[in-house]
Image (cartoon, rainbow, N blue to C red; front, side, top):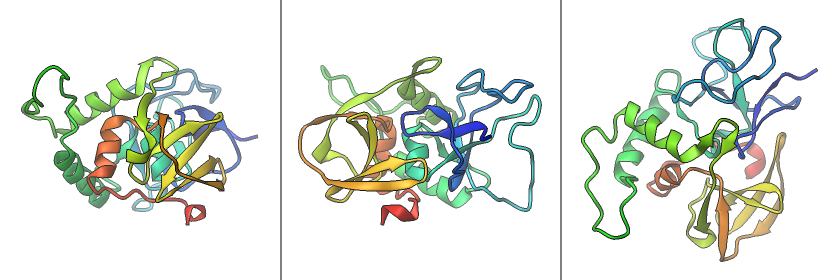
Length: 215
């Protein structure tokens, strides 16, 4: 029986046989019976390599962090995870550069765009900002509205109960095992799954790793 440790672009944690291409960490989510009892414990949600320096560990060891799995990095971003600074150091540096370039500080509509506060690009500030954008509360993912035609490649939207990846002039339907359908991208307002700050990072040039079925 598959453990419940696979994450969808909606941020749900589900049990499916496919493992995915990236691993994630958001703290201790399971109990002694390896059942998921919370959807997050810490604000540091990261996406990691499946293998790093020969390290091996159980997926759900007692009292230790829960290993989660994603189809690909675009899925991890949609769920609100960022690259790990240790096992994916080069990707993390690219991400930090894009974050700084995107300057995704939310401006007030009634005033000019403010300068980001001191330390805006610190890892602690990034994690605080992302956590505010991805959750209303426990088990309550936060979604946003966006104009579809403006979204960068790598962002996820919801449509007809499914998650769709923005890819050039098309949308690709997500499944746990890969992308299985394609439809043309059109204009109009859509439900955005990827947190807005991460959409800004994608627009600033950060290219996420995609599952081979996306090509």
